[in-house]
Image 1 (cartoon, each protein chain N blue to C red):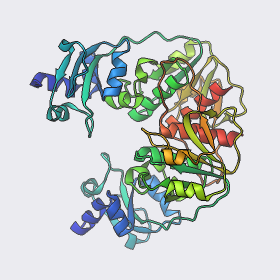
Image 2: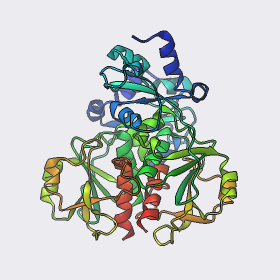
Image 3: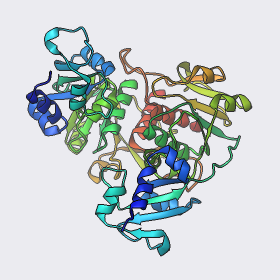
Image 4: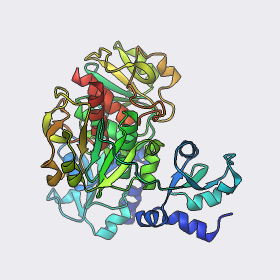
Length: 239
Length: 239
């Protein structure tokens, strides 16, 4: 059985201000929840239609109807868990860092976190205008990678000015990434879906890079930010 | 003003069976509609809150309230158009062909169509189990690329058996794509989100390829199909 106050708490966590107020975020689906249970994250409560065989005090067995009431998904998937938002891991200034300048779509940010995980990028730095990484749609798209990539929110221009690393940025008119030498240590900046990298951040970029377009002049004018990140990370790693 | 029968027709086009029955599909947003108006596609009707200055018989000026009533989007965007579903362009057997084995998510298929457009892939062949490319969410994600990529639905195993080209498939345990020679003419097969490439199609693949994973053994077990397609198409083209 779910109490009214439990339902109220869970549904409030759709909004960033309540996530920050309570210090909790929501994860759905057995597979992702199990992955998070194995991580350093701390479980607050688990609501499930089938037992996970974990400590009984953390688990509340509920009906399908109750799950539908609290789920953020159109098709709820067996379980919903509330975890504590962890303290951000400090940024490490070695290897490749990905920096995000105001990406707004949760699916895009989630996909980028999953890509960082795949390509062994340990640090993702987001401008304060970027969508919150504990947004339920971001968590859904990361498929568990949120536990392995350190995400920090900063004043991006100030952050980039303060570090001593080459700063690569994705632009439509940059150097061909296929022929550009790419370093092991550096920052890759990806911009907003509609406007790209902001003028303020552009001024700090040391190397503008671009993914060449093939085929017709008529072709699509841009790539989605998550697919562009996939291609650029692949280029940094293959070298 | 919108008539009841117009509203009924438009909202029915969310479903594949009515798209096939009427031979129409829906496009939303000024930018994409303008791109489709410049293409070979035939406009059936345009419902808009601001005039496009096109032939008056094709355009119906409507209110924001009416647009909300017919739009498939949470935040409707000025205009909604109905176009005729074109006859599929015949498949060309030169260059690189992308083949899709039962991709279900409309956003993924739309992103793959946009990637084909960017990388100059003219032919996309989908198994009959793949989501319909005239699904409104696919159209939204293609950003106009649907006008430049020929999409055909086929019995994929039969199609692949009938052609005389190397057939590459994306697998978790394939050869490292970074070191594998990749031809100019060939087929790249991408599989379903959860199950990958089906056994039946796998038996016809001539070259299994894989995107290497970097970093921890703990890392994410797979890439999203659209981001994997981005990386593999980039590899075929950069060579």
